[in-house]
Image (cartoon, rainbow over the protein chains, first blue to last red):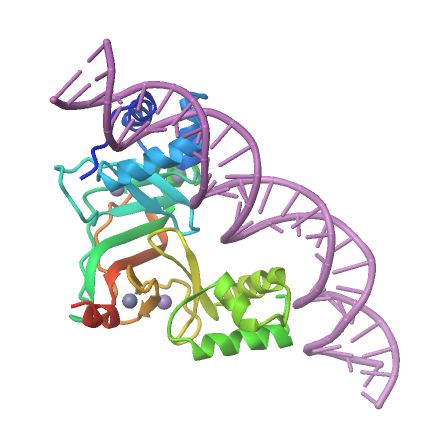
Length: 129
Length: 129
DNA sequence: TGTATATTTGCAACAAAATTGCATTAAGCA
DNA sequence: TGCTTAATGCAATTTTGTTGCAAATATACA
Ligand SMILES: [Mn+2]
Ligand SMILES: [Mn+2]
Ligand SMILES: [Zn+2]
Ligand SMILES: [Zn+2]
């Protein structure tokens, strides 16, 4: 297998993930790197991190793609926890404790799950009364 | 409320949905209309159909947006059934009978959900052995 | 059946997001 | 320290979706 290298840009991106409590889009991450590297490089770093299962990709109800660092015990292939996408503040957060249960016909083979809930997050729910 | 009109383009799009067993992207639909109308018109027709709850929007694991005609009893606000996204043939299908159950912390207000499973569909599972 | 009117459309321009090719740089290992 | 190959920068391109406005047309109604 191809080895993946620890570059300055990759380290910076990982540090950004470490500091963020919510999932981040490519554009948000790129802005936070503050011209450390090219836009394209950020795309490629994210691809690698997803491939290496260090980061997972989350798709909001509107199709917006965000990324978050995995917090679970490491080699996990299936990220079967829920994500919450707030309609008001637009933040996406992992709800690692929320796992959907479901029954699927036997003739399907499931490799991955995307379970995203949208609505109002606790913050926005409070301040919007 | 504003009434929505039955135009030739809209009728054509609905017919396309009627014939398709899987969810379709804007581009796929546009190609199937065979130059009956403009690209922008297809976008606007889809918007209207989604608004009128005749069609629902599905976001695949990779962020690709597709549309499918609703088969449930009509006025439903929350499309809480699962969708299956095949990694091989890239088709997305509604699994209307599959509904996830989950427990979410009380301080969240859920308005909509997206539950997409990905892997191999029955067709690809069979032919790939 | 004609007419008014609000909806829908085409077109062109724009904007954002993502991808590709290729020459150059630099990480990691012997 | 030098070699190999992964990673990067940059420019060009593609894909996807949006907007404004004038022209077309579906529908209600006289
Ligand atoms: Mn997560
Ligand atoms: Mn469906
Ligand atoms: Zn919020
Ligand atoms: Zn398939």
